[in-house]
Length: 276
Length: 359
Image 1 (cartoon, each protein chain N blue to C red):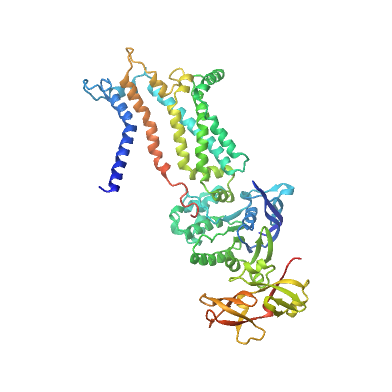
Image 2: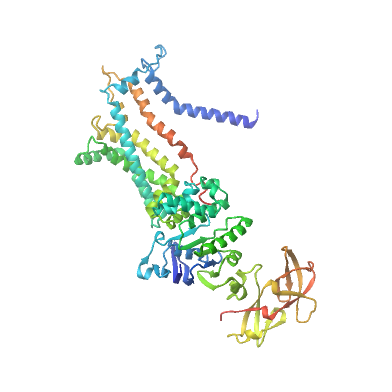
């Protein structure tokens, strides 16, 4: 067998392994959500596929799953949008203006994100209680924006530095103000970076558990991760089928978002802008 | 638009200290003039262009567009680029990659808030003028270098700028395309009559395009004049060697009364019209262009030399000659001597340039 053949086989084995490793829990989740008696696939219980759990999750008003989903989507979309907007202003300034100590600012921003969430949550609770924001959506949006900003600034910074300065200069001469340069040239050209940043911020907010657990009380503001974790069965047992069905539904928005933006993310960054 | 640059200096602060990119530069550029800023890289020509565009602020001095002062740091006046109505073509083209050709050309008009119909007409006109009519739907990534260059020029011309700025626009094109685009650019400028400031390091471009040329060296203007003036009467040795290809031969000389003593003991008469030049004494640099060195038969009064190399240039031949007064380059039109052949060179005193070394 030639060396290349061995390499190819090893490559496929590795890829298959990695994909299985990543997707197996996901498949397990879907399967459990679909089974009539979700007893962790014990072989002696025959697997019967049913959509019952999904039906319950989506229609049972006592579970409030749709309310959780709505809260999650609103909180994630708003915080990701705000984070990207603010971060792009910061990243643009950091890449384009001759500010002294630019690197220092960047590392300071990074340092802020190193605080463990747990160390902040009690203080955050007091803060939100004083504002009267406990159990509101904005109580989650505000910390999520703050929490995702450092990462967003760093990602956008690296994308913005790749955009040739001549584009800025051309836009300035063509009559743009600095803000117009950002919104009409830099952001559209860095669209792949902007979308990936948005997606990351969105996923972070969508998955966040601790803040959501502490700062919400019921379905008016509770998000999906907390909601699912606090699902209660009618007879005291854990309703695994419904939990898994709910988790499956909850992954859909992120998967859809990634699929929609995938083309944009892989698109070449500045193809044809400048020579070379 | 008449353009005035008065005593402009530009200093950059860097980690290694202050760099003076421009020193007390003054220029007057007439309405509709094609003015070329020529110089080697790092001479400050692009900085000067950026000052006119408003992309940089001068450290001192004043810039006027017609009667309007657009930059005067002493009086805290600075007009932003968008209010100057200038257009610029960049060496890198700097096209907007997310817009198609139409979007690129239309960009300045859309930013200015022009009406849809007016934008379409203006873009069609500019695109037609540069032969881009069929490419309006393409993205910059799908265009060749020459086409991108045309888009950049069309974008610059679409809103009738009062000043047209070009920063080495041809240096990314291959040689053939460059010559063609050069001719078109000159025709376009003559037709539109827009005051044009053109930056280049290529003396051929400068000579062929400019009504006038300003030669810059290390942030200072060496000489300003029409191309032929710069060629016929270079002000400094730098001007003499930078303009003209192959460059002028320069030799160390010593003025003795009415003659110049060259290395190897050769004497050249100082022509009558140059005898009353001030300071005509002591050490001097003697310059003679390669086409003014004549290969002659008679030895009397000529400089002997040996041909080291013959380079055919098509229309003429370039000779590298080791002579009694130093290494020389000479151009002959026909019947070139062979390599290794001994030749006699006649130096026409009327064609000789003298550059006095600063005491």
